[in-house]
Image (tube, rainbow, N blue to C red; front, side):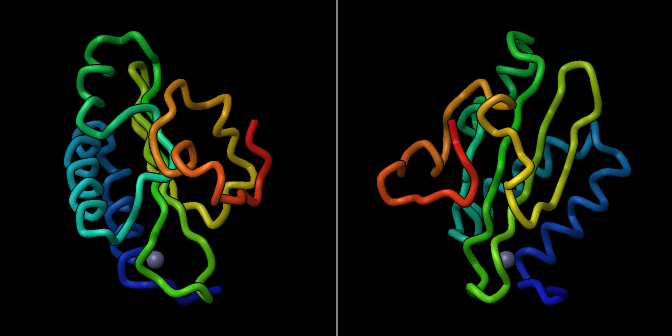
Length: 132
Ligand SMILES: [Zn+2]
Protein backbone atom coordinates (compact mmCIF):
# COMPACT_ATOMS: atom_id res chain seq x y z
CA UNK A 1 0.00 0.00 0.00
CA UNK A 2 1.41 3.32 -1.05
CA UNK A 3 -0.39 5.62 1.34
CA UNK A 4 1.04 6.14 4.79
CA UNK A 5 0.04 8.42 7.62
CA UNK A 6 1.77 11.69 8.44
CA UNK A 7 3.60 10.26 11.44
CA UNK A 8 4.97 7.35 9.40
CA UNK A 9 5.92 9.69 6.60
CA UNK A 10 7.67 12.00 9.02
CA UNK A 11 9.70 9.21 10.63
CA UNK A 12 10.52 7.70 7.26
CA UNK A 13 11.94 11.04 6.11
CA UNK A 14 13.85 11.48 9.36
CA UNK A 15 15.36 7.99 9.01
CA UNK A 16 16.30 8.64 5.41
CA UNK A 17 18.15 11.78 6.37
CA UNK A 18 19.64 10.18 9.47
CA UNK A 19 21.26 7.35 7.49
CA UNK A 20 23.53 9.82 5.74
CA UNK A 21 25.29 10.54 8.99
CA UNK A 22 24.19 7.72 11.24
CA UNK A 23 26.71 8.23 14.01
CA UNK A 24 25.86 11.82 14.80
CA UNK A 25 22.14 11.53 14.17
CA UNK A 26 21.41 8.53 16.38
CA UNK A 27 21.07 10.56 19.59
CA UNK A 28 18.84 13.28 18.13
CA UNK A 29 16.63 10.69 16.43
CA UNK A 30 16.16 8.81 19.70
CA UNK A 31 15.21 12.10 21.37
CA UNK A 32 12.71 12.74 18.60
CA UNK A 33 11.18 9.27 18.88
CA UNK A 34 10.92 9.75 22.62
CA UNK A 35 8.94 12.92 22.05
CA UNK A 36 6.61 11.20 19.57
CA UNK A 37 6.13 8.42 22.09
CA UNK A 38 5.19 10.91 24.78
CA UNK A 39 2.67 12.42 22.38
CA UNK A 40 1.19 8.98 21.88
CA UNK A 41 1.88 8.92 18.15
CA UNK A 42 4.15 5.91 18.39
CA UNK A 43 4.84 3.34 21.06
CA UNK A 44 7.94 1.48 22.08
CA UNK A 45 7.06 -1.96 20.83
CA UNK A 46 10.14 -3.88 21.86
CA UNK A 47 13.55 -2.76 22.94
CA UNK A 48 16.62 -3.54 24.95
CA UNK A 49 16.11 -0.84 27.55
CA UNK A 50 14.17 2.32 28.37
CA UNK A 51 15.22 5.14 26.04
CA UNK A 52 16.79 7.05 28.89
CA UNK A 53 19.26 4.25 29.54
CA UNK A 54 20.65 3.91 26.03
CA UNK A 55 23.62 6.18 26.69
CA UNK A 56 24.83 4.29 29.69
CA UNK A 57 24.59 0.94 27.89
CA UNK A 58 26.51 2.14 24.86
CA UNK A 59 29.14 3.85 26.95
CA UNK A 60 29.49 0.85 29.22
CA UNK A 61 30.02 -1.45 26.23
CA UNK A 62 28.51 -4.34 28.14
CA UNK A 63 26.29 -5.06 25.15
CA UNK A 64 27.45 -4.64 21.58
CA UNK A 65 24.09 -3.53 20.30
CA UNK A 66 21.15 -1.53 21.59
CA UNK A 67 18.03 -2.03 19.52
CA UNK A 68 14.52 -0.64 19.64
CA UNK A 69 11.36 -1.29 17.67
CA UNK A 70 8.66 1.37 17.60
CA UNK A 71 5.16 0.96 16.30
CA UNK A 72 3.06 3.72 14.77
CA UNK A 73 -0.16 4.17 16.70
CA UNK A 74 -1.34 7.25 14.81
CA UNK A 75 -2.73 5.81 11.63
CA UNK A 76 -5.87 3.97 10.77
CA UNK A 77 -6.04 0.25 10.36
CA UNK A 78 -6.18 0.23 6.59
CA UNK A 79 -2.62 1.50 6.35
CA UNK A 80 -1.49 -1.74 7.92
CA UNK A 81 1.08 -2.07 10.62
CA UNK A 82 4.21 0.01 10.51
CA UNK A 83 7.30 -0.42 12.62
CA UNK A 84 10.45 1.56 12.97
CA UNK A 85 13.69 -0.10 13.89
CA UNK A 86 16.60 1.82 15.29
CA UNK A 87 19.71 0.01 16.37
CA UNK A 88 23.01 1.24 17.68
CA UNK A 89 26.15 -0.82 17.63
CA UNK A 90 29.26 -0.20 19.70
CA UNK A 91 31.50 -1.12 16.77
CA UNK A 92 29.46 -0.04 13.76
CA UNK A 93 27.08 2.51 12.37
CA UNK A 94 23.56 2.80 13.76
CA UNK A 95 20.78 1.41 11.60
CA UNK A 96 17.44 3.03 10.82
CA UNK A 97 14.82 0.82 9.18
CA UNK A 98 11.15 1.21 8.34
CA UNK A 99 9.37 -2.15 8.49
CA UNK A 100 5.99 -3.18 7.19
CA UNK A 101 6.02 -6.33 9.24
CA UNK A 102 8.05 -8.05 11.92
CA UNK A 103 7.80 -11.42 10.23
CA UNK A 104 11.47 -11.57 9.31
CA UNK A 105 12.74 -9.92 12.44
CA UNK A 106 14.42 -12.15 14.96
CA UNK A 107 13.45 -10.05 17.92
CA UNK A 108 13.99 -12.75 20.50
CA UNK A 109 17.59 -13.37 19.49
CA UNK A 110 18.41 -9.78 18.64
CA UNK A 111 17.34 -8.16 21.88
CA UNK A 112 19.12 -8.74 25.16
CA UNK A 113 16.60 -6.69 27.11
CA UNK A 114 12.85 -6.82 27.44
CA UNK A 115 11.29 -3.38 27.35
CA UNK A 116 8.14 -2.35 25.52
CA UNK A 117 4.61 -3.37 24.67
CA UNK A 118 5.52 -6.82 23.42
CA UNK A 119 6.76 -7.84 26.83
CA UNK A 120 4.15 -6.00 28.87
CA UNK A 121 1.01 -7.26 27.19
CA UNK A 122 1.41 -10.94 26.64
CA UNK A 123 -2.20 -11.65 27.42
CA UNK A 124 -3.87 -9.19 25.07
CA UNK A 125 -1.33 -9.04 22.29
CA UNK A 126 -1.50 -11.71 19.62
CA UNK A 127 1.59 -11.42 17.47
CA UNK A 128 1.57 -12.22 13.80
CA UNK A 129 4.94 -13.87 14.24
CA UNK A 130 6.11 -16.52 16.63
CA UNK A 131 7.80 -15.07 19.66
CA UNK A 132 9.91 -17.37 21.73
ZN1 LIG B 1 1.50 5.69 10.81
